[in-house]
Length: 157
Image (tube, rainbow, N blue to C red; front, side, top):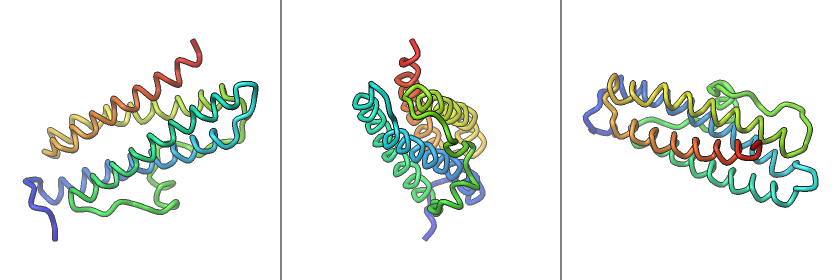
């Protein structure tokens, strides 16, 4: 049964597409953060191993929230690796050095890309697609990604 929440079917379809791309980005970033957690090396190994773990745990929660938001507006969340790779704005992890600074630089760029994507979509979701609930959700997620980016960026001070 489709939800009767005061948003047209066309608008929920458009918003679900925005959210699906976001979910794909969150998943790719999650995988890259797990990679950093598993493969980081160097004298600060334990500190960075735990740091990356806290980051991927947050991303796991974000993925669940985005998928549930898609379901709340009456659509199915993408859930295959193939669909995530087709939808994402990010690139998969590339072969790189396994020191923390390289991982952090790559992850920071991805968080900043997600922040930009969220910023570009918050207002259209509210004004064009009349979905204030999802716009508010995206605003909260924007703040979360800004904080995670700040934590990553602080390693370069």
